[in-house]
Length: 58
Image 1: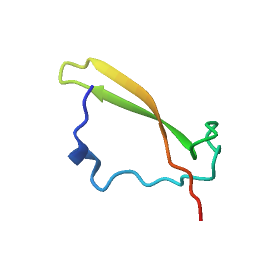
Image 2 (image 1 turned 45 degrees about the vertical axis):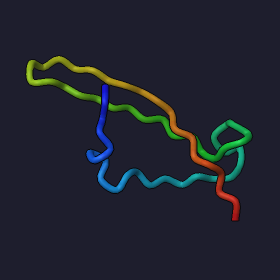
Image 3 (image 1 turned 120 degrees about the vertical axis):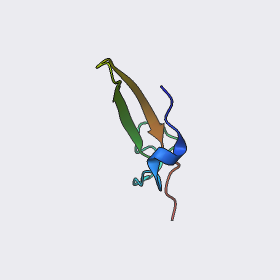
């Protein structure tokens, strides 16, 4: 499944958190996402993933 960047508008804003916040000691928070789609014939599909943020270091 492909989602063009322009369908997300200005993107998705999330809090990145401190080092290790998402379970990876080198990164910040982790966010799981699900993309679900249904075509005109009623067939559905889904795609899943996890995105990690760089850690917030003040």
